[in-house]
Image (cartoon, rainbow, N blue to C red; front, side):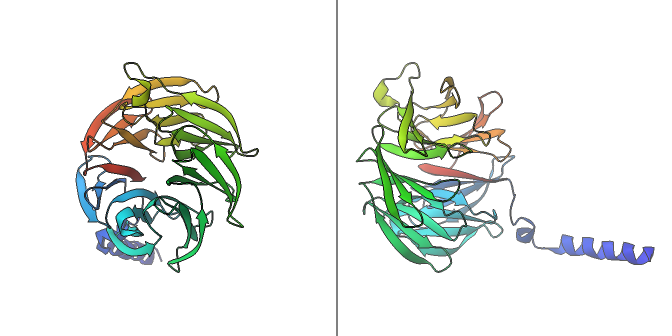
Length: 329
């Protein structure tokens, strides 16, 4: 019996070693994926050495990206191709595309992952897209130049920014009806919400601020303004935002001010301003939240930040005009 067990273990080990490399790396590879608008590609970096593993061709002008819930695929907006490309992480290639409407920019998944909500900038609409059927189920009219898209923690609400109207639209996902239009700061861009879903934070690119919304009342609670030393107010252009899972810290990129801000969520106090690359745009945390990746749109690189010290460990060149980073860890 013991001999059979030993033989079985040996066979299992041999089979594992014989698996193709792609199958062994179906997810949790540690890779960092960065979309590059001017390269029509996603750059894949080794998460330890930061060397380029592969460059994956996509549709034109790849922008927003997100991991699927099973962490086996990455969806990436290809704005000028009017689609979402689906990257298989095991294969490191685009395996299918989903039509999503004109000039898509940002998106989010429904709570069950069956649909995506996509902001279509030129059409002033949000497309509701069935992922499996590759079918647009509905379009929702919103303000001009919609960008940021966020599905609430419970899946019942959809938040969309309108850059021109200076407004956040609150939409019922069951009916696709607008429940509230909240005027926020100048040129609102992107969202983060607290773990309990009680607050929604929205960056105001031309307002040098973040507006904090009460998610239950759909009203403004507070505004956090940014003023790093040495920059005029008009140079401080917040865009990207991400929040830790415990809801204690928010990281906000400040665009042309070439910094990101570290904000204490409870007190609304700014704990630090950290210098990074040119036009700090996107912000992404690793799963253990020890590393923050800042995407710098005009210096064509990403900044790797140690979140314990808020120190930049290194800058890593990527493609031209990088937009979003996703970490498969």
